[in-house]
Length: 212
Image (cartoon, rainbow, N blue to C red; front, top):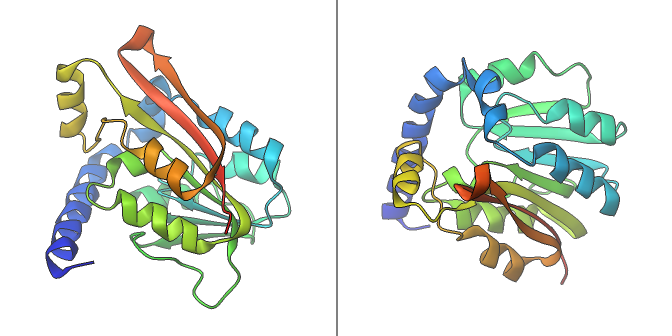
């Protein structure tokens, strides 16, 4: 990444941190009304893989962590997020010694010389990485073991400029840009779009496998 891009990514990360200083307080109480497909992506993922090591990028308040634990009781789960406030809430939902929470950005692989992951989950995270969504997808590729899976649920697009503009104020990019890149990097097992509120916007679910 160039110095210019690093500086831009740093500013974007700081803006998101400021955003969640307030929104962390109301996140779980409000997001159920429009972050659709979060249970579905977990159910669909469990049909195609039984991971031993799971990474959730942008784990936020840890809303998905109990569901991951129920589906994969033997897995070691790592949750990563940039917001200290969101992770503080997530920590209250962690009730076992096989779940780890890390505060950091995700522009490079985490596992280093350790064991790679069998599943990387992005739940309404990638559309907020602007810039940085491509780097995050590339990092997921690097973090996954051969044959491992990436699972994504996220906003896709909207036909209404006013809605796209409003979402951009909330740091969300809605241009359908995620899915082509994901399907280039991973062998698709599921790649679908769904209408929300009668088509005000669409969201998508993608599950793909890493292949050489």
